[in-house]
Image (spheres, rainbow, N blue to C red):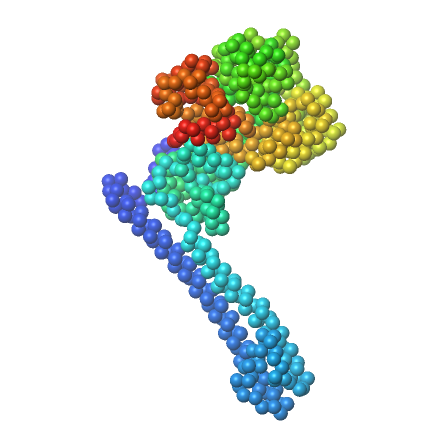
Length: 595
């Protein structure tokens, strides 16, 4: 049997367990925690003693200088024919070294004055520079750090369970914490840096201090009672975290992100329940948002049997009709419209414009019916290549996803070593007008900007919008705070790396009821709130109250797509809603829902 065969290997044998004696196990765990705290205190005490010895040595050297200078003072005064007591010698030495220099005792010879200069310079170095620095470095700072360390939390409450453990506070973790908070999931972030623990704790983030490769850290985090450990650090650290957790429990799910393809298998061997390649997920999301290809409508997401799809309004026969009329004619649910990056929930008075993109929800049968009935005869079936700016990992994966959809592409890449073939690549900068013309910017239906630097993406978005005001621009955003800036720059669709990663992690929280369509639009599924059970959709009035639309009802393993106003919300059922994050937050505020 292989050591890494998780289906048969008992990871828990590395920890002391006794399933037949829970009382013994509890006492043993408490003993280990106490012993760990005692060891940490002993280490801290040892460090303090070392600092104290260094400070004491410095003070002894300083006292030796003072006594030595006082002895030389007596000799030089005798040489000049002056007589002073030993107290006067110490008094003169200290007043000179401290730069006070009262002037009541002075030398008359040049030799004595040279000695005075030496004492003065020594005092400036030892008393005014080295003494304060040594005191702060060896005594004051360790004391402050010790006080700070004693105040930071090192464990979670003893009764905590069903929580999520994070090992990093990055943009992905920040977005995930927002979702966990909305859905009432407890969480804790483990950080090895005391300064970060104190800083994030002041901001209201639930954090504890601990080393990520120390099993005791995860025991204090109650990992055996957690529902998931999510680690988004570099691949080597994620592997260490996974292996450490598996030495304690095999029950808790461990989800890790991977930056390198080779790391995926290593993380799985270490015991990871699921490995996420966020770059690939981002690429697939970017490719899904491209309008065109061989399909008339294209699916951009799915929850159970409910499909979410988009279609360019100009390719349909619905242009010019109002929303209410179009909704009555079609069997799918037309949820709303994308207009230049802004999503608008469909209102009865809304008119379908040729430049908008329709967002629809329905079953596979309903979407096929829509394709056959509402495709305009003049709708084009062939498209020019989509331009991808950036041939990095995300750019190449986006190209592969487009190829699977039957959409041709052209990658603009500045680094020659990344160019795989001359047919689909143009070597040069995406900020060069001539390079973009060679790539086909004048005829391309879409440009996808995939670089990891948000400032560069904003610049390229503005540049492409100036060259082609009518082109579809899809951009990647690393940080959520730059999403609005990219929209203002001219991006039609922005896919946030942080939101994408947090949604993927949240969906693996033993639930698959949250789907990010794009930045600013989510599909989520929740249990029917108690106060809405038995009411019709018209009576619930969720669109006006929360700005979210019900696009599906799940009850007894059956999904009702495109429910009408008279559809009843069944007790014990679930509803699928689509809306903006603000609308989702408002729904959760009105109808509190938890794990």
